[in-house]
Image (cartoon, rainbow, N blue to C red; front, top):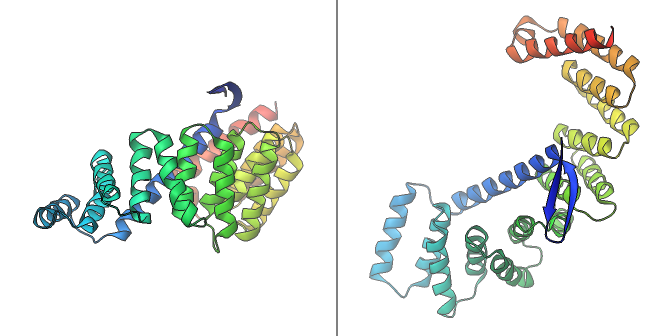
Length: 297
């Protein structure tokens, strides 16, 4: 399915699955932020912790550290307006540390205007250019404005100064490049994913994303090479063979597609009963047999 994606001043066609992929990646990043706040603060009932801090603030209304703590709790609670009020009060009192600026940026990201979120996170990055969380937050803000090209570059910056970048960073950068309208956008996505596989060898998710990027570019030989690598290193080769067969079909090579489908069925029959009798494998077998029937007519 192809969609027309409209951004201010221009529009372009793109695959629905790529848009879903990018939104899914950003959802994962949002969840990551949630767990960052969880790990930063003590465990316990969130509402009770907010009530406790409120009581402390009543006793010490000039203690801005308590306001910062409550603001971060409010963000966990998704009370972004209340969080913004606490952080803004801290800023007005003369405090100007990274936690306050970061909290304001995070609050504005959810309440708007997003330009304010970018303003405050830029203040953080002016002090700490390699602040991973701040770079991630800015990338989210830019993506929400449709500025996928700059979002992709920021993810690449994070990758460059991260000692052990997670696979999701490579996926997010590549997904943003795919939605970017600049020339060589798919080439950039491929480059990022190849770097990811170099730094995190044989990572299945990265490999499948690279296959997808290759196919968007019509680079079927390269995609098939990745498929073959996955098949070689997989204990259960049924689905990898099925996936390579589908790529052969997309490339117009029905002969090799049929070979892979037959090999997939053979591999499936060698599986122990507790594996081949699960519903997912039974459904996969039906799909393989359906494709073979169509191709062998």
